[in-house]
Image 1 (cartoon, rainbow, N blue to C red):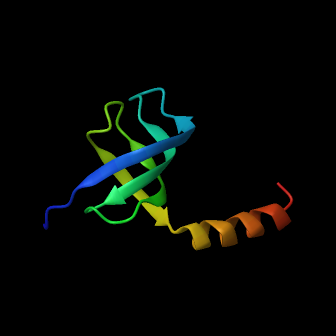
Image 2: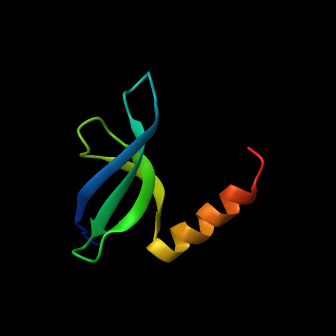
Length: 74
């Protein structure tokens, strides 16, 4: 498996927390392999040393998603 690097450049919000293991689902700005940071939603270990699967979105993709969510009845 190829090595990769990441840096959480901005912590935006905690969406939920697993009471059993302390992992949090977070919305952050993350730079992957030194690239421009993207909005990122995924689960993180309490010390941010491990992560679960997630999704990274560009600013444009997040704007589209926001528009869709604004139109939904939640």
